[in-house]
Length: 296
Ligand SMILES: C[S@@+](CC[C@H](N)C(=O)[O-])C[C@H]1O[C@@H](n2cnc3c(N)ncnc32)[C@H](O)[C@@H]1O
Image (cartoon, rainbow, N blue to C red; front, top):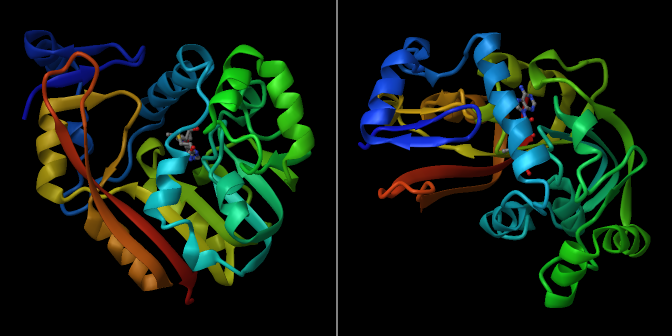
């Protein structure tokens, strides 16, 4: 595997430079036999959040989504949720764009809460899809048409005010500015969505425990993350460092959490590959897409 080092300013190094940087800093000491990297110290997570903030609030200030349409396809248009009604949904690690704004097209969500440690900043992102009162569904004025893309890119304030007026909304009950590990657990939800988040957290066991504390019996989880196997984690951690992604959870840990607590309604593993900027190497990876109803 090629050596790659991505620092907290999202600068990418390869070859000798990466080797040198990896000698100084890597996540090897956090690997837990049989489980992958399931927890890291708070300072390691804070470095990841520095990179995350930089990514969305400075470098990605013009971004309009985070693969949310791709996830919709991989979840086969959330067909497993079709026809269902959820009283109160929570999206954990919602980012500036959310997946609930897409899930809400395929089922009925009466109100929602959104949680992200950076949510206080995300609400001022020019393409944020929610405010303190409403989440705006991705229905009319999606960016997929050329006219909307032009409006969205060059006339952002006009585009956003039209989008807010024309699109159906889900009322927002609360914006929670905290990590899942420290979230309030006195409120319960009918639907919990956690897509592309675990890798960014600092303690998988606390995340899983809090999901079970806040999801009602019979409630539904919509779960996606990278789906690592153990040998792959060791190989990656020895050869690569990615400041923004502190955790690499072994698929056996994810499988046991999901199979012990949920009846599957949908499950799919996708095989993908990507190429980092300026790195002449393809990185292959698996992702798990899972929807399940809580059994206990
Ligand atoms: C890659 S983004 C994905 C955002 C969103 N889920 C999406 O698919 O558009 C990961 C998000 O997880 C958030 N995050 C990082 N650590 C977290 C934690 N411990 N608890 C909850 N969210 C966290 C980050 O702030 C970031 O907004």
